[in-house]
Length: 399
Image 1 (tube, rainbow, N blue to C red):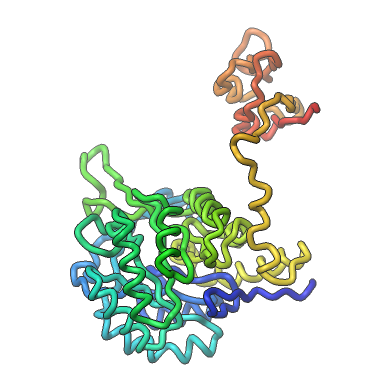
Image 2 (cartoon, rainbow, N blue to C red):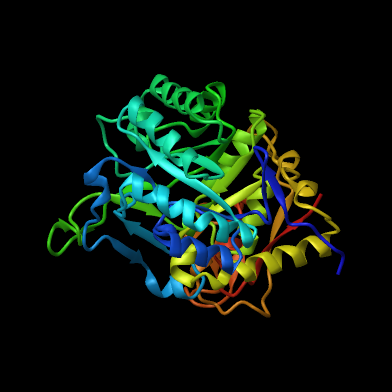
């Protein structure tokens, strides 16, 4: 295996690999953070530090997994929760950061303090506070899905880009630490937010946070569990997060991007890097699978890099961007033909039922049996090949 270097540098801060624990339950205390760093994470973001007492008292219950069987089998699932900000008062975090900083450093880790103020004065105070505690970086929580209105934190602040600009400028003027802005995808354009944050001085952006959702029980006719809205994320979100990351990278804003939102495997980490991210944040995957997945991720990334001939992360940051085809250049000609492999076909009839063009029809008079194809009707959309449970249908290029 070729020797590879997993380290990355973001805003002058060195990370031993591209995997960072996002702000959440796995980073709720100093002990939790140390556990994650020892397990292989390059960095960890504290649960968001705030003076808002209401945000520091956790609802009970507050976490619900949609499709838990799939979550435990590495398939698509969703994490629905109303987990709020850190339960610790800011001053307690100062003591905690000071105490754990040496141990985190000894394991090659980076400590990022997430903060959220209700007004500019609180943002300034919190920025100075975490700098005094010797955090390595500060992350601005302008993305929390639970914040609705009336304050300058969470996604509520993003309803006015001028407010975002003022928050970033206030924090930048208050600390010498590198400042990272976390983007919300909910009710805002992440690219516009990224541009605003960069214009006001952030040193990096995180793309993207969770959405807000609501799950209702049809039998009780009420929202489940805690009875209100919650953050909604998980592996299903990955293509959305990667899409926004690519848009931001294509725009060339000049600051590092940290991918986030749906990361659950080592392949997901690589996908983010291929579209322009320098590192990723993950949280839900560790909650479901435990910190043990961190070492597995780094080992597999290292193996993949060696197989591809990459010596460091920089070698493949953004290299997939040149392969993205713009809408106006998508192929409109019918260059493929549907091929049905009768040795694999089980005669289930699913392709016949779903074909939007009626190009597939049952063999003989029965609705069972292998399908026939009417090429004149077939539009080569690929729907049947994508759905076929036996993988008996494929598209073959004819030009």
